[in-house]
Amino acid sequence: MKKLTIFTPTYNRAYCLINCYESLIRQTNMDFVWLIIDDGSTDETEKLVFNWIEDRLVEIIYIKQENQGMHGAHNTAYESIETELNVCIDSDDYMPNDAVEKILTCWEMYGSDEVSGIIGLDSYTDGKIIGTRLPKGLKRSTLFQLYRKHKVTGDKKVVYRTELTRDFPYPLYKDEKYVGLAYKYYKLDQYFEMILLDEVLCCVEYLEDGSSLNMFSQYRRNPRGFAFYRRELMSLPFADYSYKFRQAIHYVSSSIMEKNLNYLQKAPSRVMTVSATPFGIMLYFYIMFKTRHVKTTM
Image (tube, rainbow, N blue to C red; front, side, top):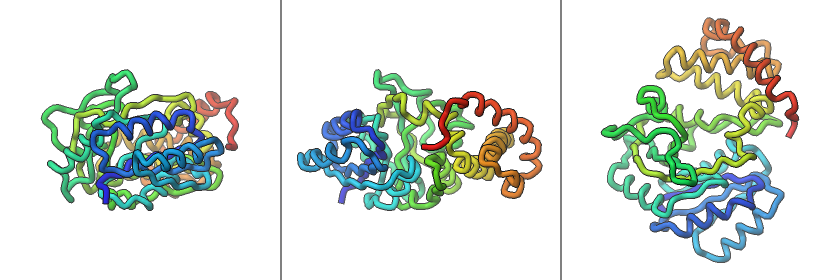
C-alpha cells in the first residue's frame, strides 16, 4: 500500500488540472496515490482523467459525485482514503518535484501517534513564499497557535494522518456549497500538535474563479455554513477573547443572512454574542452592499 494520498477536489477545472497532473508525474518519490474528487463537473474533466489513468504514469483513483462544494468533496475524500497520510492539492495548484519526497522523509524521521501531521509552506508560482516562513527552532505547533502565538501569516500546506481526518465531518446544508475547512483543522488542534517542515510543498495560483477571491460572495450564498463555522470557532477552548469576539461578529452577520432570529440560543456565549450584535449588523449591511449584484442561487 502507498504511504500518501494526494487528493484534489475539482469542479469544472479541466483547463488547469493538467498543471497538477504534470507536477505529480515529475515527483522524485512516487509512493503516493492521486485521488480526484470530481464534484459534479460538466466540462471535460472526466474524459481528461480517464486518459491519464490509461497512461499509467501515476496511480489515480477517480470519484465523481453530485456537486456539494469544497467541504463536501473533502468529506468524500476522507471517507475514501486508505493511506496513512493525506494532503489536499487544489485543482489550480501543483507540487514542486520533490514535495512528496520531503513529506515522506519528514514523516519517517519525526512522525508518530503523538502528532496529527505536518505543516509545510505554500508558495506563489514564482517561488515567493506566501506570508511568512515557519519559526526557526520551533519543531512542533498546532496550526492555530502558529498563527495566533507565533504570528505566522499566509496560507500553509497541511498533511494529516488519515485516521484523524475522518473525525469532525463537515455538515452539508441544502442549497449551500461552503463550510470553512479550518473547522476540522482547529478541532484536531485540541488534541495534537503538528510537525513543522519549513519547505515548500505546494505552489499556488489564485484564479479568478477560486473561492479565496470571492469570500464576500461566499458569505452571502452560504449563511448557514458560515454561521456553523463561526459558532464552532467561538467554542475553541484555546482561543482568546478577541478571536472569539471577532467570530461572534461574523456569526451574528451570517445568522441575519439566514434569517435566524434565534441565533442567541445556539451561541456558545450569549453575553459575548449580545455585545457583538451591533457590529454583526454593520458587517451584514456591509457584505450586502459589497455583494449587491451577486446571485444568491447557484
